[in-house]
Image 1 (cartoon, rainbow, N blue to C red):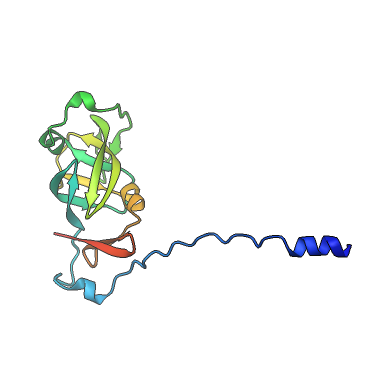
Image 2 (cartoon, rainbow, N blue to C red):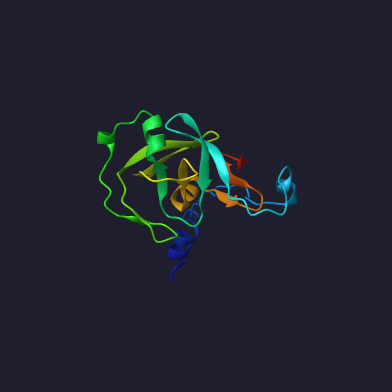
Length: 166
């Protein structure tokens, strides 16, 4: 290699470093158990905004891959059945009961200041919950939930926000 080639290689600009985004750490501690009765086996049930309305009795289900809205809530949000897209995949409950969805719809879902569009499956079935949010929503929020602490935490800018179970 000639001296000129070596100087040319040495004077080439240094590679640009990618900008690293520093995200807050999501974790739970014993302090997060404050105001919970311990020990317990309660599910994480929260109040969140769906379609601009405060909705109580929303189950956060880490074990499910489907977000569900029950027909009573759908009607309560003043949405029309003709606005539903087709959804032919039946849902199977823990007891083996098969529920055929009425349809599906994408709605804005809000926790704190964070808004995520969620594809909900609408079903006409009994449930003690009004809606169920699952892994797709948790992943879209970058959230983790803890049934032990009855809380969900998610990053919002450079802070950690939380949703407390009810």
